[in-house]
Length: 237
Ligand code: SAM
Figure: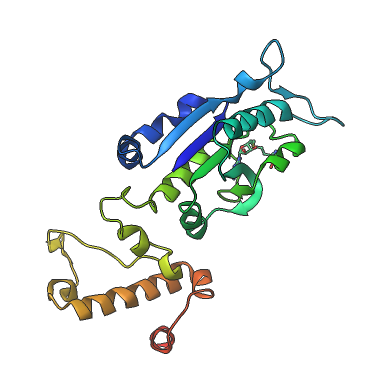
């Protein structure tokens, strides 16, 4: 997958060179290009922001540098792409959208800063995405979160490709509790069923624990989960 990121703060993206995403780039599963869109300013002082028409606090990012930067990306690669504007007012990012974006060949992220974007920049975007109901100083961390969550669904990025599909939010349930060695620590024991070697019982226990955890911690997810009649009975107990 090819990813272009338009930002005023390229150094913030160092984090993408670490861990699994760093390895994914080494393996050429991900090709990340970071572009300081200030280079597309047509102002002799390289300004990319200005005061809002009608007054108000802060500075807005101007349309010209974004349009010119996206034109350059399109000239370089005319193929289809999703252009994602990071925006607290956008669609809420979730695991489903991460999975959907992982099917794409080319993503472009437009990172805002200061008071945000001139409204005309929205016309460039195929998607406007928020990572939650709070306001960050800029879109860089939001873009990194989205890239990380999306890349986990690209085959070959995770050591065990299946694990992305058994994490929390798969089938709208939270993940079941997990344990490793030692079997007992400070009086806290690993449940017997996990030591039993009975894979059918382990799978059933895990599913019930995922149901229970979701019911206790995120009952809103259960409203959209596809529950069997056995699941319903278990929750009614
Ligand atoms: N004035 C804007 C508003 O009220 O919606 C907020 C601007 S914010 C200080 C600057 C930039 O950070 C935004 O343009 C956006 O790119 C990014 N940003 C802030 N919060 C975000 C969020 N929850 N999700 C995605 N991007 C966010």
